[in-house]
Image (tube, each protein chain N blue to C red):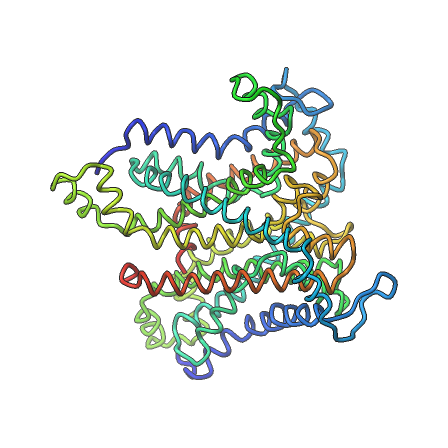
Length: 266
Length: 286
């Protein structure tokens, strides 16, 4: 194993600076004591973090985003687990086409999905509803859940299940007591990845959200399009800090590279 | 499990299948149909068959310019991601496990942060009074303040930042499949570091670079939030154009035609290049 030379490390330092610069800048500006955007800031203040509390529409959007992410990723995992077992265990006509259909939201641009849902929901009377948001988010997060559950399902030794059945367990007991515990790491990491993708989704949601039913990223996006002020930096900084904590927890639990590399290969 | 092997997969995948037929195929078909509907400023959407939306998008130079800009931005973002993402993946892969863990968190972690928050950072750095302009003025690299807001260069820089982690991930996955003994063998036979990289490593990770490029290109060509914030309302790309037709002009049929062109072009590029990669490099995938 060879080591990185000075040139490689210099490149690496530049790359890391490039990656961190915008994130650090958002956090730095958020602590400004001034009433306007200023960088470099003189002084340190939590003024703009306290200001978030005066904007109930952002707090409501945050709460709705959490609910939306929790509900859609839970329903998505509920659909993905049996589908993954069917794909991993059985050879049947249309298996490939079905898998492609389930993974297709990864390939369809989210703008196109947003437009398709806007049209569809306005035809069936669901436009601007929270139910519409949930249904559309189930579709975009299901592929992430499916890939991780699928990876876990391929790794199961089916003889363990056969042993359970030969000992008299019925299929439901076998699933709950044997299969499910074996694929649990895939189920949990799939749910987490689905939750994050739902929470961060903006491109599709901006088409189908309404002023009364919207998510935090959409509200933030619409606000930034009109004006950029310290308030949006403090909200973004809060999001960044929350994500950073979550990231470290996830890294400890699953290993961030495994969460992503596991999902990078189909 | 003991269930009938013919019926079981259908029962297991049935719920997800119904949801996807109802919520993916049906809306897409309806959008495709919508693109053939008529629209007028005062009459709104009329369910009469017409090809005028397609005709307008395909013949009007205004749309050429926007699709051309979208393609140009996506190509630049992909090229820069290859140039900086491939060496970074290689460097990360050679680090000790502890350092690699830390820097993977730094490089891959931003994928979990809302794209709106990441783009906001660039909006703060760009601009004539932003840090980039100030720094370049202080260094004497430029005479007058430079403003990257509402420029194509600005969009390319911000989008590269958003998407380069996907390139690093794809190349890392390819590097981890390599056998380190091959690299050592080349070195023991007297190859220089650069030769090893060019003749031994690079040929083996080309499939990873290509699949990373496909991902980055597809996401860059259909990106919405970043070009909308950095490019503003004047510097439109395909995705922001479709958004304007739907939510500002309210010409849904025309917006649907733009969406269908974007979808068709991307699916063709993704499926086509994946076929090509798999055929050309079948042996690398074993």
